[in-house]
Length: 424
Image 1: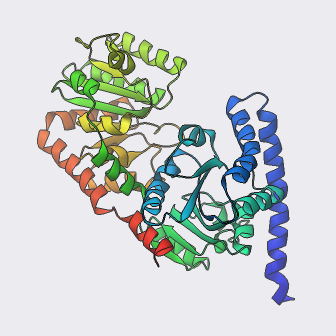
Image 2: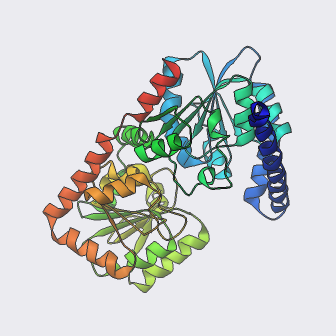
Image 3: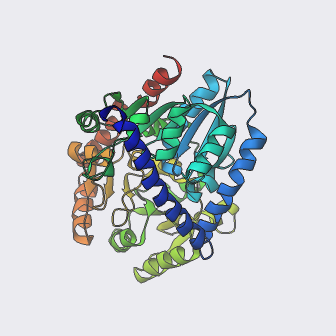
């Protein structure tokens, strides 16, 4: 009886899991009647099989990368770009689950095929794997779709998890959880020693600590960043504070502060660029007596920079280059689901500040310990941090050096993963 228990457990797990997936898929389909985001997801998944049938031939050798959204895409990008350069014999398939990832990167030229990943139901999984027939599957960070992993492993696909982080509270390690999905991986490349120890304590030993591949990506972005004349004209040698991926709760704190510090320039790059959010920022600025100019208006020549203290970046794709003009950066999201991309700013050797929802972000925690980052919880704590930094230049410079040094010292994860997966 014991000899057949693992197979029985896998079958039972797949049945229960698949029932839950069908319920989830149905909920998304219903939501698509009312939500444009859900509609794009459903329509994109339907189109996936047509794309695969047209773009992937039976003789193709396929390396499959899956990212939930944009953040995970950036973590996988160094591997895809090196694979394209060193092993052109592979056709690169990139899948997304979120419209916020796919819609932005559907024309990414570093992959041969870009599409949505259909729901993790048995029928969709079998059709996807039959059409894509990958040799290698690389799942980035938090993507652990059980039916895909089980079916791909059964078909002999080499499976890898890259830049993953594991914590005791995750579903795998709770009393009702299971390690079955994680045991399908040929190897897991994790970000820290705690993740490795946790996995090994649960019987998963094919684990290597390499760090976060995103650090390699932000260094590459920094090295390739082009000057931005619009920002240079606006900053004009003044000290500048960059509010990156900014949300409303952050804006309510930092905007009034800079109304009292007119010698500083303020650049606001909202996480959500919508008419509603931009109008909210305008109201906060007006209430604080601050004048602002829009990035796109200056870039197009419709307006000229005069004596404005604030620039609002009302377009995407500029933030990673804009950080180079800052002396201090704020990373938004700390009062919502969690902070955004800390390394993207820290790589420029400037201190970063962010709200309290930062505990699940390894780089943020490391920078806090090393003195390259600072946490604020409200307006008074933000003011206290800023007052110390802007009145003590050696303190400001030291914090920035610590931030930059951390990024450079922990780079190299992408190379370690690539060598193991493709050159071993």
